[in-house]
Image (cartoon, rainbow, N blue to C red; front, side, top):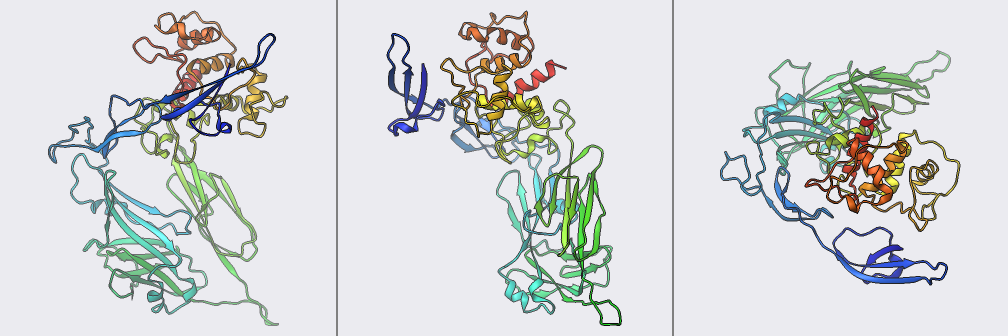
Length: 546
């Protein structure tokens, strides 16, 4: 018997083999194929999927809610309730807002993908701008820098620019103070506290570099040039240049639009027989904490020359990304500029390598930290950390891991295929419902060849079907070589619900600690395995082989 599902009232062609979990009204169609002495039979029935609300609260820094265990929808969402400013426990859900470390943070955000230079400032000074901080608060003061091609103040600033008006670097400098996850508030003027803003700048072919500013309703103005970099006592509205190291220092207590302009400097060289000019371009290479790029700093090259940069992480670090002219080229360890015809920048971002799931600090060094929907502080941390670090699993996109999402049968086949170094396959399509051009095609063919996966009784595989706990245990058991086990699952009150075909696999998985119960003596062999549960089982399986 095979089953397909659709939204109630939808057209027949919208049937899917995936059983719906989102609350709503649905229709199921059951089909029995014609066999000897029996006619084909098809029947339909309507059914309802309802929300199943968790009894416990789900929480974050700003509020709490009850979450549907099936689809993740929220209800009863509300902000935390505290009796006074000194209370740290929410009266409704028990959330503890106590923060014991990192109460103030200073950050600089350079907008990626905009060609913005790697502007820096003293983050300790930013932390000093946090103001009063209660013990349950984390206050972050962030300087955000973004290159602007067409700022609103361009025309007004342009009237002051005395040099090359078509090549002015416009920067939007904004300062914000944020308490926990609340809406940040803008800081437009820091008063007597003046920040030193360091802007990497290419001085090649330029002279008389000047800085301009348009702040609020104040008319645009040119900043005052200093003869050198001051040791202390910074004054708002001033700047200085370092042509040797390629830096412009801007001293500011007001945050808005800044512009850097210049006059053209020409030079030529050649023989007395007629003369020729040589065009040079500058490559600016920078590396963040955790490694080096060679050569570094500013490299001057003739037109059409080629230059290769080598990238080396320090011990305990790895290359997180390489940005060429502000655009990502991935975590490469070498990059070559060929036939140079313009100025370029190359910036390397390093990150600390994770110490492993068991010793993970569960901070921004944890591989989970890059996903907005995953929490390093909950039960699934070790499994997800392990699978991400080993490359066994990855997010559903760059910012989401989806720990509560069902794991499909095709996903597990693909994971086991990767664990075997993604070998090539001999045969073609293995099951009629597996698309040869799909992302999982090679993995399913390989898994079928190795006997790791088995299809349904009707000959299909159901690649998009949510995998059950017993199906996952069976795949891991077959992948391990179908070993025998002394353990039995009779101690679980629902052991009788397990498929006979999966009993040996379940006994083995329980004995090895790969599969654990859900509490109260329940094994739930037919229950669906979420991506977080699958990660935990994969980690335990790998550990059982060590």
